[in-house]
Image (cartoon, rainbow, N blue to C red):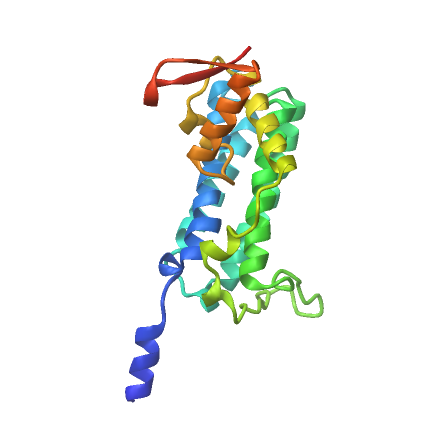
Length: 231
């Protein structure tokens, strides 16, 4: 009896799992924010358009699934992870169609797709590489069996951030920032951070300063009111 109670106390939901919260939930949240940001910035596609409405619905659904997983224990969240993965794939697919219709630029679509791939990689790292492999011999009514990684408790931001950022990564990030500024009338650092989610606001600020020094970007305003424009 005492051991059973101890086991129940030790069980925790994903809201207490720093890796899931930071690298899956929060990044999914930022992806959804970026999708709505792009939709509202670009007025080429009317609000009543079926593809735009479908894109908005799928973005909301992805956020709802990621949010609901916070209340589940890791082992119980396996099927929900499958649903979230499928939702991200569907969202990326509809984004491609929306971009083909002229609702979003190719550069911005690539940025969001890059972030979606990042969340998918984080999910596989969290659950193990074979986590999303379906057993096709199982009946269609059965839930996919997902093996939870035995090392998930050891995942920490410090481990993931131990990689050295290369020059090529900096150039890629600068290109993504330029792509964002190209399609807008100026953005603040927080606006950019809502789309480029794989680095901090300080990193984005450093990239912007480098672009300013190279004569590619100009800044208007001071401190939190600063906005950046492509020259």
